[in-house]
Amino acid sequence: MEKVALVMGSKSDWETMKNAADQLTDFGIAFNKQVISAHRMPDEMFDFAKNARGKGIQVIIAGAGGAAHLPGMIAAKTTLPVIGVPVKTRTLNGVDSLLSIVQMPGGVPVATVAIGAAGAKNAAILAAEILSLQDEHLQQVLVDFREKQAQASRESSDQLV
Ligand SMILES: Nc1c(C(=O)O)ncn1[C@@H]1O[C@H](COP(=O)(O)O)[C@@H](O)[C@H]1O
Image (cartoon, rainbow, N blue to C red; front, side, top):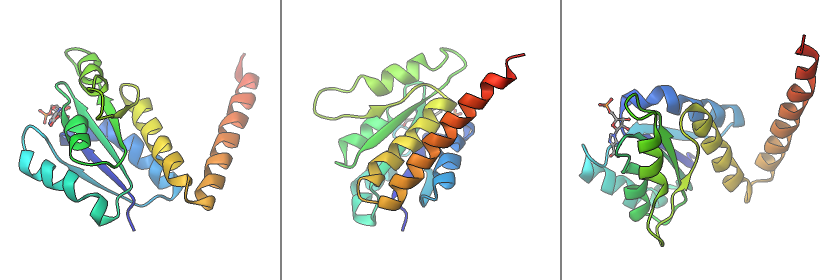
């Protein structure tokens, strides 16, 4: 069953959001992905957010750029955890996206990660950490992931030539 929904405001966000998708796949986490825009498809966005929990979704990762209202509007219609990914923009380097996502009013949180690809990857890791609270196998997957990462960092010392 798909426990993570990966949504984005436009197909143009996919290059960034693919980093979240790839990390979820590496962890063996089933997810669905779709373009949903609060601005361009408000009724679908509303239905998606309202029905996500009932469909078995446990975490929503939402990426958007510019006037990035999507994560916040989804958060307004669900009590599932929403992780917001600010997509880098050409005009303002994604600072516009970041500020649009992170500055939520008290009472309606969006867990906001960094701008761009690293943020998208971290969104997937954060989703895995949330799911791992109820999933011992996933806890071990995350421990192994951290150890592999640490080992790669250790070995990188040898490449300092
Ligand atoms: N920020 C939003 C929303 C929204 O928040 O509802 N819908 C689309 N967009 C963003 O518009 C940017 C440009 O989109 P196009 O490339 O389709 O013109 C994308 O980064 C998208 O996330």
